[in-house]
Amino acid sequence: MTVVNLEPQIPTAQSTLQQEENLIRRFQSDIADQGLVGESRNAAVAFLVALSAKLESPLNLTVCGESSAGKNNLLDRVAAFLPDEMKKSLSGLTPKALCYMKEDEIEHKAIIIAEYEGVKGADYAIRTLQSEKVLQWEFVDTKNGLEKKTNRVRGPAAFLQATTRSVLHPENETRLLFIEIDESEAQTRAINVRQAQQYTSSKPDIDETALGLWQEHIRSLTLTNVIIPFAKQVAPHFPADRIRSRRDFPKLMGMIQASALLHQHRREKDGDSIVADLADYQIARELFQHTYDTGPDRKLEELLKVTESLGTGDFKAADIMAKTRWKKTKTYALLARAEELGSIAAGDTTGCYRFVRASTVPPLDLPETL
Image (cartoon, rainbow, N blue to C red; front, side, top):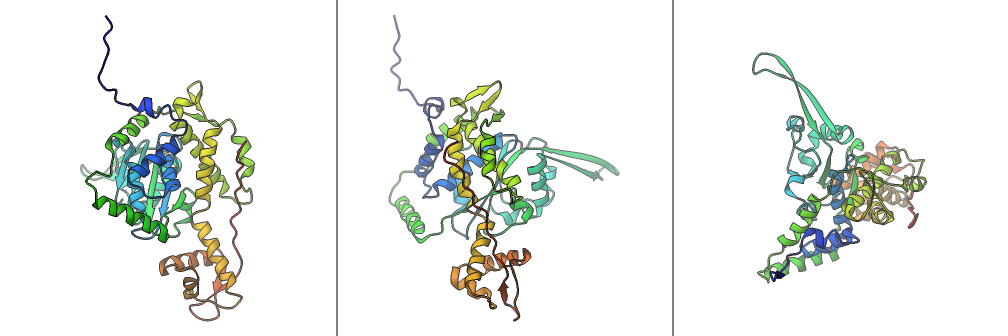
């Protein structure tokens, strides 16, 4: 006799997520259901960067915005989709703290940093780990006399950090993707409306069951190599007159690989490697173009367009602030960067500047199809 199971079947990650054709679109819908207002592209970028921790060459991200704009809210909501064993949250790091961690403490993890100011002293260690994927630190232990010891911390790891700064150390900037929080009045209004809804309902904002499905799906992803068969077709579309393209191109490749990793249950295999397809390119193209149009270079370009419009005479920082509505900290940080690059110079009057030359970010026009 056949026994019929009448118990309700609970959906699993395998039945609900592995069958999805576009998991990024599903993620954007699910994170909105979890309470994130707007920021759809930014959330998708942060999610792929965090997921890239499973790759051999992870991506790294900086989320920029004014205080209270929602930088940490974005990162926290993205991190909620990750299994606990794949993430590590930090409020700060002393210069050598990273060097004394356990050997496998951050290996293939997404490191979520609440504020860049809390870790800027550890810049060198973070940059080294990002580039070399390992930290090897020799030190003298004085507990039993003088004894030289070595501590080894393995990567790779993906670093995601928030900051109110408009510019960072140039050595850091070329290693990072950048996104900016939406600070528009319309976004603030939408957030206030969502916040008001929370006070009128007893229903929790977080759906732990939905998050659990994503966490189980991510656990099911195997650490493996990703082949991009169309990589050579993409390379010519990067501006060769810009030396930082040598670091920007691998970022796009990394986003394609992260998408293929996420969709690995629907991708072809070549031996032990996943083969990315054009669907991964389409996802990465949209999100990478979004990040390319953000960041310090674009802010600097905007600054110089404003200074050029002021004419050939001297101008003050206040003139820039009046035109852009930027705050003092942001304005002076960008002026310092522009002066360092020779795009503006000190004016004839103390405290004034003068325009020297424009600085244009070469356009990136990635083809829609290959």
